[in-house]
Image 1 (cartoon, one colour):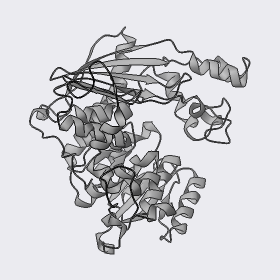
Image 2: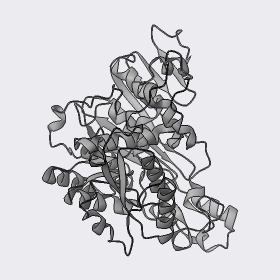
Image 3: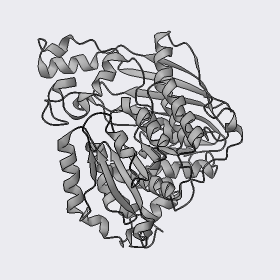
Image 4: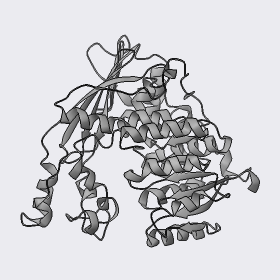
Length: 450
């Protein structure tokens, strides 16, 4: 973390020049100007947000909540090390977060809890007049998706889905290329979450990502709750890392919208095989029947004639990839292989190395704050998504990724579940904007503030 305070450095990209010091890194805000933030959930993800908040001079962490007393102690230790005032702590029971939301000294909350709590906590936060940031995915059912939208519209309170991949350096560079019409009129996208999570869904009950085949009550960290979704749901339960970035490129909810979707699932053998390999055929969990298919593929049609293919692939051995492909009338980018082809610029029928293109179209945010952001987590993405949340909350204005986005992206989970159960039957996508997508203007992404 100390290296993050060395703001002025030479950069690795040509033409970037001197690194610009973030204005919020100075004491330019008085105590009255600071945003008072509460954290609901200070597990591994919530603690990462906490650490990044503690580096800001425009934020006070005034309250924290977690039902695990040990996580409260860890959070307080981080705050004490940062010379901060210890916050009010909550965690007497699963509903104690409501007492945090009742505090006048909380302006905004960050919710990093198990998925089944995301919507209800976000709704309660907006009901309490708090600016809410929620980790992905935001919702599990269509009813919950509508709850987010309806509560936002009724209360006027804002919420932001904290999708960090929207701020990945290559993703923002490609967004810049889309905005500058490098690929021509857009036609097709591919994306997904292709990440071997077997070591996350199972562990030894002692270490979060260690070997072992326990989950549920005998597991620890994410295996305690996340694996149960694979037992009970045959669905793409985690669509937003891939879908969020391409939805922004496609102007979804702002001139375009998702119209319909079909989904198919392969057989599911990966999690069972993992249990047998590391726990033995006689282990109790070897008898568990996992409902989720190992590879789930969904295809979305949009209102203006584009298609999006989403892949969920988390139960089999494979290297990590979000599988991005961004294709227009004049060319395309593919993340796997890091390659780009632009008709009239590339050699005919030959891929270009993507890196020179990505450097040429590097996003203004990364040019300005990239060196500072790198150690914030997930290669710098965590800095940018948190910065957007804080800056939007300080002004109490709509965030870049709002309630309509949270609802539309998260709706992939329940819609894929129904489609799969009905042999790939097409599912109509709700219009969460109630027709306003035709008039809403795209967010101004190509700026250097947030």
